Amino acid sequence: MVPEIVCLGEALIEMNQLPEKDPRLFYSSFGGDVSNVAVSIARQGSAAGFLSLVGNDLFGDQLLELWQKEGVNHAHVSKVQDASTGIYFVTHDTSGHNFSYFRKDSAASQITPENLPNTYIASAKVLHISAISQAISPSSNDTVNAAIQIATENKVLISYDTNLRLKLWSLEQARETVQQTIPFSDFLFPSLEDSILLTGLREPTDIVDFYLKNGAKLVALKLGPAGVLLATEESHHRIHGKTVETVDATGAGDSFNGAFLSEWLRHSNPLESAQYANAAAALSTIGYGAIEPIPYRLDVENFIKSCSNQYCTS
Image (tube, rainbow, N blue to C red; front, side, top):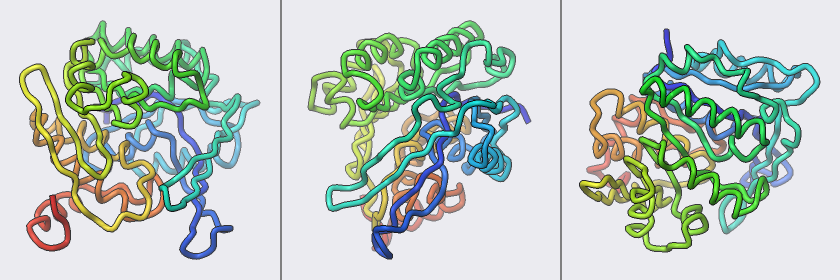
């Protein structure tokens, strides 16, 4: 099956702390923001493809097995002989979750424009990219820019998450790169926390207006537990968050992105897509890890139906 949505970025091995059992215990799973999005897309029933490099190691093999199991097309993921697959650790405290990364010179960071399959991207309906992919190395940034060019020339829609990681680059570099990418973005998926730093603004309405004025076609500003503010030049819609028993919000934004894009492909209705994705993101926080709690379509549909009872509120 030709992927409807091609995701370009980094995949990682996740080591997630299990504080309820023993804070010294870590559960091994998978992560990487764009890979998470690809899995979310596939679990909603759409055809997802992933572009990246992995290490010629056990972790690289495990990621390939993950995509095979999840139905994510990975025909253009290659192994790098002399580089390892990146790893990150998630720890939890009263303030939420914290990340520690071990990805310097990882296989994914060595991707170049020559690794891009032009026809594969050109045949998709949507290309999904992330600022993390731009930050992990200069060659990865060049690759993202090359993919944007291929997509633009072939009228492929572009989805962009402004994921900000200041351990990877300076705020000045991030602002400059994000600013250059926004005008190409048909779907922009920033978080409020990142946007406050990227724009210098604090009010959600001011932030989405800033992104729209700078060229984004549609903005879904993720507000965490408070929900999402969906904005186009024509309208703003505030969608309130769903209250669930959250244990780990790792990857909730990625789950939102994938669910939104999948639902948008079904009927091209931004508001319904955001409402659906809002529910999917809430469900993704009731278990540990970035990948395992990502809900399937039936789970999301049943959850939306159940939101009229005491289980969740809006």
